[in-house]
Structures are given as structure tokens and as C-alpha cells.
Image (cartoon, rainbow, N blue to C red; front, side, top):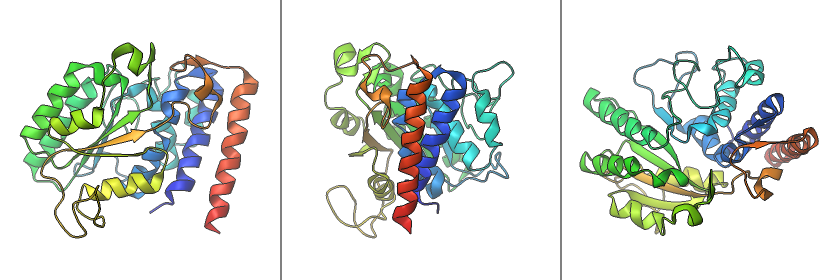
Length: 291
């Protein structure tokens, strides 16, 4: 298993250098999911870059498809395609569109971008895995602004009814969406309580803490130690879908976090250069901490 703290900083740096080559993009929403991607692709997700179409692999659905650049950086670092392909993001002829497309990008399991639809797709994929009898899981990443879509809640009801304990959902709760703060556009209130009411085994963690994320995933399998978040040291996991609410910062560790409107941004060369230098420093410190 790759060290998740180091891997997270590698993903952050690669994603920022990808945005630098383009000059604009969904930097904020990409930066808030970096740590979760590091945990998943650092060892939690069962996949094979040498055999990306392996039928019995785990699947990952980035329902908030505008965070695709973070996923692309992750896939490149894991060897799905050469690193220099990242510099072609959203350019003519690219295999890396601004939103995820499984027909264009090796390693992307589901096309997304129309918010809410990724939830339904992930439920269908998890159901298919169950019907095939595969020991495989489906991981789904939702945005908190995406929760405005009724389709998400319809999908959750079906997942609970079908007892899809192979479906692990993340909600990137960064408090922002395209038109502003989520509480001002449509306040969803206590989302964790809502997820529980819709039949999910729900946990809330710091979405920038790789250890907390990894433990929450372990809890979904009944592998974590006893405590308020876990089912016990050796006990079974939940009998339905799991939800992990990630408290995050949109644009985490970058200048984007301080912007009033930070969904899709154009930036000055010195702004992205500063973010890249900060990412390099963070990466060096993460590596140093291992020595």
C-alpha cells in the first residue's frame, strides 16, 4: 500500500501542474477530494493499471465530474497513462476532458458531469456486482451541492432497499457550489442525519485526514476497532450502503480557498506558481516525515 499522505501531495502537485498548463479550471473542487483519492488508489481500491478492464475490479464513480483533473492526476501517477498526457487537459484531441468520460480516459469507470446521475450509475454498478457474485465494491464521490438533485436521494433509497453493502459513498462537504455557499443556495441542514434516515451507515470525518478516511472505510467492512464510528473489532459491516461525509475546504492549500467565487477559476501565472511551490513543499515534508 502506498503511503497515503505522500500520495495525496503527489496528486495535488500533479493536478495543479495540469491546471497550470491550461490556465483555468475547477481547481477548488479538485483540491477537496485529493486525500480521498490518495486513500483509495493508494491501496484501498482493488484495481489493476495493467488490466484496466478487469471485470471483477472495484469501481470508482466521480459523480462530481468537474473534479476529473484530480482523478486524472491520480490515474497517471498509478500508471494508467503517461504523466505528460496531463498537460493536454481540455485541449483539442485530448483524452482528458474537463469532466470524466469513460470512453476517452483509461481508468475512468463512469462518465459523469450531469450532477446526480453518477449516484444512479453507481447504484446500478453495485447491483450488477452483486448479481454477478463478485467480491467487488463500488465507491462513489458526491459533491454537497449535488445533493440538491432529487436523483441522488432516489438512488440512496434504492441502494438501501437492495442492501448494497458493497456501495461506499463519499460526500465532499466543502460548503460551496457553482452559485455560492451551499447554505445560501439550498441549505440541506444536517446531511449526515439525512443520509442515515435514507438507510446509510453514516460517518463524518475530516476529509483532509488520510488516516481518518482510511479508518472510516475500514469501519464499513467491520475491520476497525470499537468506538462510536465502528461496528466492532471483528464484527460484520453494515448490511446496506455506507456514507462517509468529508468535511473539506474547497481549494484546500491553494489561493482558490480564499476566493469568493471558486467553482471554476481563471488565474494569474504567479497564483498557480505559488500554489505549485506550496505543493512541492508539502510533498517534501510528507516524504521527510517517513524517514
